[in-house]
Image (cartoon, rainbow, N blue to C red; front, top):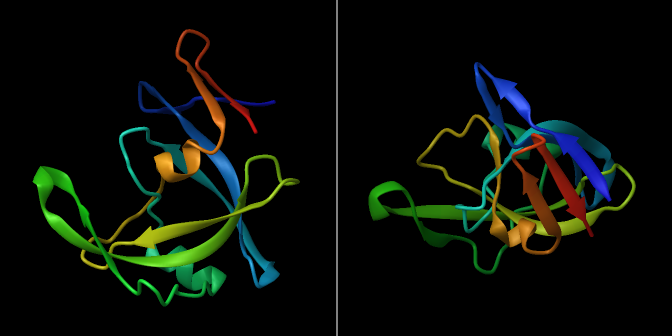
Length: 132
C-alpha cells in the first residue's frame, strides 16, 4: 500500500503525487515528477518536453490516434511507451500520449493507468491510497 498526501495549490488540495518515470529501453533516462491523478481523463497525457528528456520511443502502430478534448473537439494524440512507478521499486510499462496541438505543462494520469490499480481518493484525510 502506498499513501501520498494531497498537494496544496493555492488554497486547494489536489491529488498530485510524485511518480518516477523511465525510458523502458534505458533505465538511466528517468525522472520524478508531480502528476495529477484525473479520473475524468480516459488516457494519460505527457508534455512533449518530458518525452524529449526521456528520449521515449514513439509507438508506430497506431502512429497517431484521435481523442476528444474539451468541448468534444477532436485532437490528434501521439502514443509513446514509458515505464512508471508509484514507489520507485515496482515499475510498469504503459502507453502515454502527447497532444501536439496543445502545449501541456503537467502530467495527467488518466484511467488507462489508474484502472490497473485500486486507487482511493480519501478527501476527508486529504490523501491518496494506492494498492497494486
